[in-house]
Image 1 (spheres, rainbow, N blue to C red):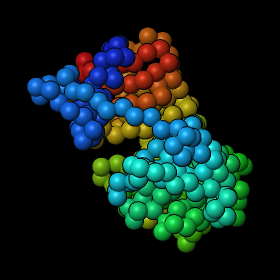
Image 2 (image 1 turned 180 degrees about the vertical axis):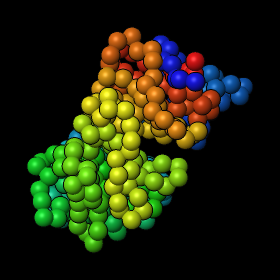
Image 3 (image 1 turned 60 degrees about the horizontal axis):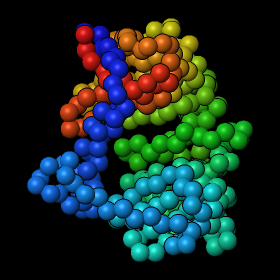
Length: 288
């Protein structure tokens, strides 16, 4: 059956998403009577007065050892629960820019940073390494960066897809995938899928071969914002004019109040419900 969108109040989506969050943050909450609605939350705020270089945070993650890392416009910040340690050009000359906008952790405790200028930077064992784009400059674009399940790092730019080899970013699929990349996804079967602004969806095999996924010509004309795989293995494709699902075949999801860009798709792990965020509202995805 074709999936269908139903309008859902934003509070419903946020309440559902909170189920998973409360489990992750259980150490900072106290339950009264065992009902999630009775949980009290500890709130504390940290600012430049406590050691942050600036009050604006661009990205936040907790690594496998428990440290909190923050990307800011004045460097990388580590928080151990008591104090902040700031890494910037004043104390780390290998860092090409203080204006860090994205963070991702690799499998070997490596942190990967993306800067506002489009640098890809590896932070490992207290040392920054700027990973250059081999034989090209990506034109100052901000790459879509991704570390797959095997620990391989990928970057998507206006020129196409790149991967890190011997501390250099090299092009992948030149001549096949030459369009701007918007997102990169590792699927449950280990395959790598890539979305673009004007050329549809591509699949990258284990040996680095890139092939276009056979899809509807209408999708190839879409600006694909991102691709998401749910727990059942269905692929959700968020486009500039709507939402698509792909399993055995491509199906356009019906029910948007008006043609609208879908910017995010989220599945609630506790219930399996899938929600889509669009310019016209928040929707729950049902099967007809």
